[in-house]
Image (cartoon, rainbow, N blue to C red; front, top):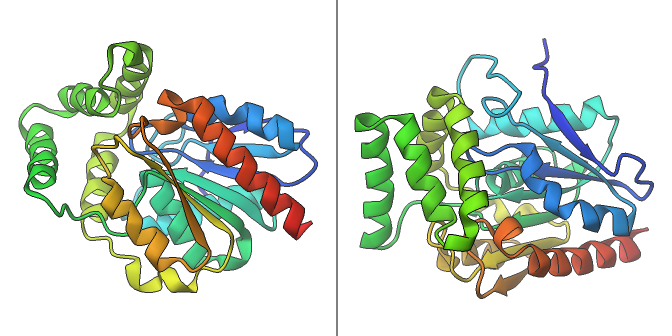
Length: 264
């Protein structure tokens, strides 16, 4: 039995292909609404699922693994009769996009990996302390308090208040057991040995001010994927698709336009 997955559809009449949009941990598909203008400009349809355990899609039960999330993503493509999609993912969603490209390569036309990783283990004391602190807060203060702390880390500036509250609200509404199980699963993730098998056009977008997934972690993707190119947006944080939407959309539009031109 398949899991019913709620999907936000952007520019449903798009005729030049489909983009699968995968949100970050604790977020929802609607996070990608700011990229609808790119889809309209390129005449692409966007499918942005609430991944299981988040938003309007409940967790179906069973083990929480990245491979299952890749299978859920493939299920969305099957439900909308999409043979091959452009796939974009941010943070956790980018890890799911990577897993999808590795497990089901025939279903992926291009990859956009935003502030994401193939291997998440912290490499500095500062990041060890951050992730250890998140785990401790989750145990002692609970899911609600963690939502506030994570949202403030992702959107720290005063002008980010609306984004910050939106993220905190979606984290609070997520399934806490799934949320923390994903954190544990990502802690053991290492897709670096398989990156060389990815052959589709790949754009790695890095927020230069990202304090959650540091730029040096994202550099693994550029070194490992033969077809990857990287764009660094210096002022952008972890929530680059929102806090630096115009810059992100400009680079993403150029990448997708090039892919459409060279593969059509």
